[in-house]
Length: 590
Ligand SMILES: [Zn+2]
Image (tube, rainbow, N blue to C red; front, side, top):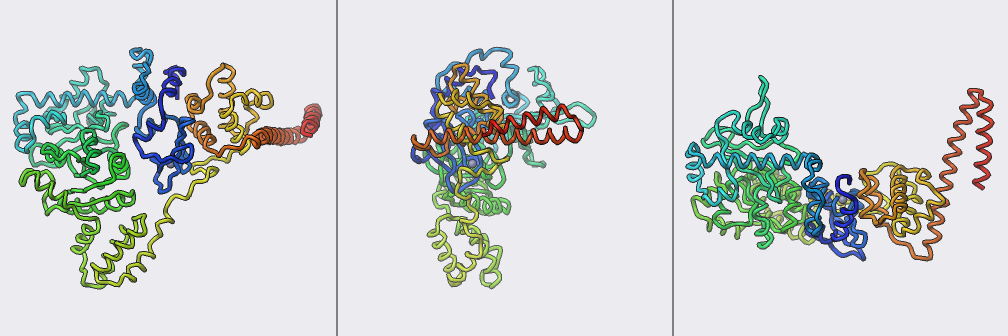
């Protein structure tokens, strides 16, 4: 993990960082004894198995095994590269990083960093195009669509002109390689060799992430030709469905309003936003993904969906409802008339019309029932059964039994069916608790290789808790005596650090591991329940003894194989010395 940035600097940053503060700025943490816990942000769960230790400055999930220190959390949660996570926390902690302008460091800048840079350059290029004299048609188009100059500026809108290599030539002049342009998704290879610009003759909507970095582009035609929109392909920094358009601008408004209005497209965001509805995000077309919902949950648990009034919008809304309810979100829906979207509604009827609709958004129940009533005949027995089973699928997503009860009661009234029948159907569905993640057991990890000898694990825990113990243990055992490569590696690093007189705080220690396994194990042991002082001494000795016994056993097995092989080859000398060794070993074992 480390390497370019000196260990003492990393240690300094960690020493001035509070992991609880960092993690709680992304997910809500609850106090649990001396630790904090939460629903794991890295896997789907209903029972909190994600633990954060303020004392150790580490986190660990007993459900999925994800674990680490503050750097690792930012890398995983914010998809940062290691240097970026270090930089972020250094800035927050007021630690000045050495040699930022060192050409070696600059060269080593990660691919992601380079892609952000290229996208930034491309966005600047497209933006300038919009100010050229030849851009009159595009400027007129934007003004006809009701987009004001201030918004064009705020959203960094731009123009891709009709040429085949405008962007290529511009980026080349900035010494950007074609390979990188292609990786950024900005250019495409020609069949005849060479490349051409992906976006041509289109209005450019840069897509920014939460930290306002350009991660991709959306591009719209100026006329009615098809496809209306094309987007950047997936790249190392852009994954469809992991981002919400406009969130970088609206997140504070969403937090203040404690409510997010979800729309589909760029203009559905920009037009209402410019007219004063600021607590918006655009999902960019499809049903909301779990990742998008998790992003939103950092800011609010109240969501109003305003998707297009067409079949695609309806399907996407219905699909999103189930995931939202499953994630514990309080969701409402604004049904729009056929052919209407938030952009057209605001342009044709004014922003107040949309505001009123948002205030009067209907419950998931009313929305879904209305949609189903149009699809199926509620007067017909089979139609009724269809509607009920579809409704129950969503009702069953509620964790709360009272809510499930209320909604089944309402459903029975709306459909004029005895509640008893509705309940019978509900019970046929998989019970809620059966799909939930089981209560975590410290010893059981989801992603598991061969089980580690518990004595090795426990001894590592003791050594991490008490540095003086390391020397004592190392007088009796060597790293090679640990049978698992992970425990052996941890012990070896601890031993080196102690010899150098260095700190072996768990959060610092893991900066020395490039493998996830070893740091995961460190975190896991730190969350194992503590032992009372009087039991501790005995447990330490037991662990050492067991590891020695295990070591003897494996040496004996090894010798046994060697002896057999010497017997079969008839190597008398070798056989005699092996047998001697075997006797010595047995004597030692007693
Ligand atoms: Zn997890």
